[in-house]
Image (cartoon, rainbow, N blue to C red; front, side):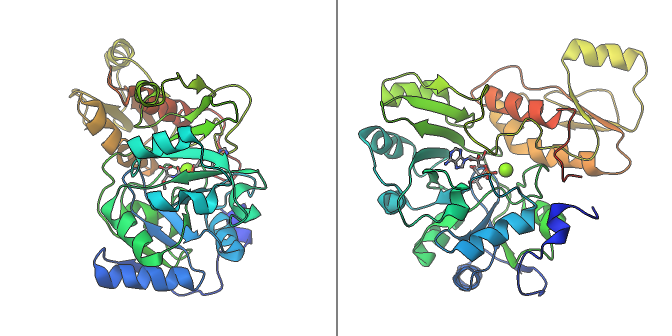
Length: 341
Ligand code: TXA
Ligand code: MG
């Protein structure tokens, strides 16, 4: 959109077209070469695609914010191999080690005091840094080849639905980034669980994801404290996010039945766990993991100009249900992020 933050600032020096790279050795070598030159490369992870840059390069990290149109005070996660945590953490507590041992590589981000290797641009000036070791084989292999941490937010324009395919990335960022590594669809489909480890040993839950509160409690021996609402601890956790162009409403089956009796317009898209007798319906299935894996692709159909509204029925239960409800509440938020769409 004209006048948005993202359109005012050039995202990178080169205006070369965005390269589509395979996830084979040649693709990953090229990705590492671009990253070494300070470039921006979108990469698959098990959760969503991330827009990666060298985490230790201040200019490369700044370019991420420009490409996404993301406000500079929203900190980025640094992606690492599990054994690199102490490069970027000032202290690696027993709790951090226990959680990493149990859940890394995997969809858990641990917020800890940062080391001097982490530039201010990554953390928005915070004294802490979010670290995550992705389990996706392509992300892990690229990290091994690169040998250093990669700062990466989700590879979408700010406020839009997170990408779970290389096509989604290009829909948002083609021409604004150096390359995307195509690793197929992301198997988890929603972003990592984020916990902050407080100095007194408590675990603060900042964002829900595939690693559940029950799993965290079982491993750490203490119940995480819910900090997902109330005063903002994770500056990127804005109320409105994951929004397609059409307005989104989260409803239950009774409400859907009521609306269908009143005549549902053909332009309305229904996203739902079970089949519905309405032409424009995406059935994600009743299994919460399948539902999460397909959710962002389904929401992106709400960008189709012929869709007037999106009605979503969440899955009834399952370990992923809290994370799905969280993302849907943000997708349905009436206030749009300032720069999207
Ligand atoms: O699964 C994921 O976490 C994906 C993939 C690419 O790894 N990444 C992701 O990044 O979702 P992003 O930037 O879209 O969301 C990161 C969240 C933001 O809400 C941010 O505020 C929070 O992490 N965060 C990062 N560092 C933090 C810190 N030091 N303190 C508190 N929150 C932090
Ligand atoms: Mg994001």
